[in-house]
Image 1 (cartoon, rainbow, N blue to C red):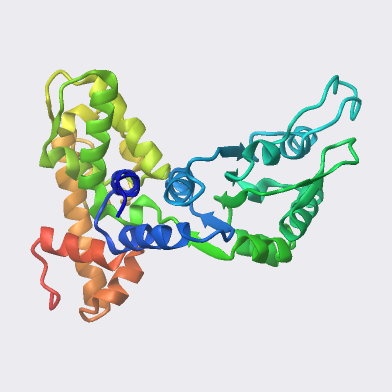
Image 2 (image 1 turned 135 degrees about the vertical axis):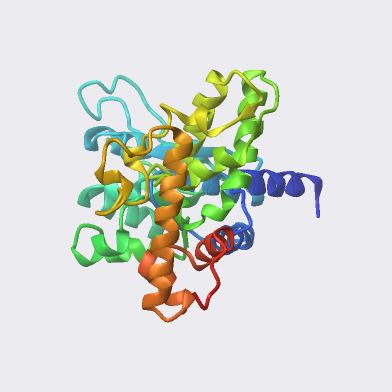
Length: 340
């Protein structure tokens, strides 16, 4: 194995950190697909790491020495994105006072990453399909035919299969892009990876900020596990950076998350009728009490699911909408036997 490839794999393990089956499988797929020149479609919720996966594909490929060009399709208006992708000649439109090279041209024989491709309108979808099929295009206002030599990687946080069924996204373009279709899992479905992600994130942030390496306590991790993480890994890294900048000690506790994680955004339901949450005099007030109350509620929900499924962990995990590995981890944490 060459030295560069090993460095990239190390970076990949750090960026997509964790030992869960979901993330380990994704890393294996990325390494296998990187050796090909096929188009790749990365799907997953916002903040899961699709951009990181795209860069890893480029850096692991033979195209690594050549450009990696990122195009955020959601950030560009329909009137601008066509010129940005394909370029334009002087006079192509009112403000076109000279020739402009598009992103396909700038990518050369490297990789072009079309981020949030699900936001492209019908006209651009048709034009992109032609480029993928013929590997040829023209600048706006031009007659010279240019050859597209770059590898195409696309990503979207939309449900692209549903968009195809509803007619919002071309089926032929979807199949052309999804020669390899890789799903980047949300953080809530791989909570067992939180310790690795936190350790990696804290190390990177501390190095970047010139701060000493911090240590996270179990209380710190416990509160993180109770959050819903709608923004996924990106939200986690932003939270860790805020914590680290404000922290007064190298030892991070649950108290350091106060004001960073909002309790009402937790993935767990609010206290049910009959719990201490009904009485404002007995409602938990400190972060430690919040963690304890939520863990008690989580244990109750797990026990109810196991009882309803007669101890079938797979069905209980489906009922609770969590990964089987996450459920087993939490059962072990709370001392719950499968026969419970």
